[in-house]
Image: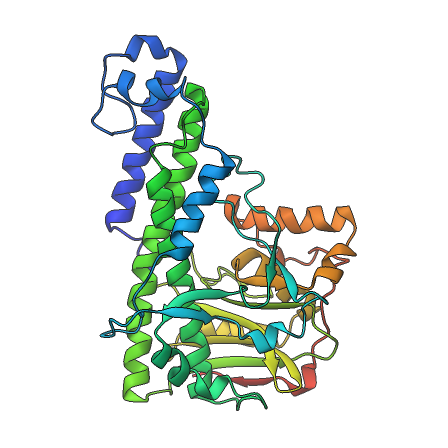
Length: 393
């Protein structure tokens, strides 16, 4: 496939040029006091990043207040044509999460720390109540209740193309909302987060922050197109485009998750796509509950996509599927929740390995789920391989 030639490539080149210029300034800042600032703000260096060197740095309280503002912000329903105020929707139903909560109704989550300037440790552990977990202001009351009525039934839901498309759609909308909000937060703090830092650190922070913003902008663009496409299928009641692999779980589950990703390889390590390509294939992975049964569900859309077909088919032939799924989710989604007691019982070595996988998903191209020497000791569940159901279009 052809590599992308859109705005993203041009802006990435501009960012590289700004970072290089900043590195030159950082070697001898005094020489550039009266020059334009390297960051492209159109201010003089002495009135921009040089001035910030002696300013008080942002505090954790400053960051907390910014997050609080965006948590309280009102949003409109994501469904096209609807301008009603959105409510707190669950991307993972609270009834599913109830199977992994502790006695105080809490679970663990591992969100990306947007303000962490150290790429080596970009994630942190967060303890959340079951009614806060996986919520996002995505839909108005009417669309939230009517759209997902069939997959929210207490007694379980039927494995149909329509229900799979709705689960896929909700994963896309959650990711779109999360990316939009995170991008807005980073853009707000971009001008202040370098306060109190030395010139070299300022450039490093700028590069990491702007890189994340650019990545989010590209993701928002792609997810918006995908969301509109799915909504058209929903309106036309065309569910024939859905492919899925439904994997029942044999042993008690200790995680719940819902995410959307561009897998670069199958679980057998076969190459699928390069992230620099246009027209990337999207795969949703959901770990949840269907009545009394716990499951993992991989969903894709679009007919005759050989990449999706290869991904689905390799799920049936790889070893240690349950363990690989856990690694895949750690590498691909933040919308993952872990039973507190199971996490607390892991050794420090195992926890460090989890953090390295989380960090690797941001900082490198390592894909451990497709490797034979993947992590051991964090076995999450056994799969009922004989009862796997699969449909590929």
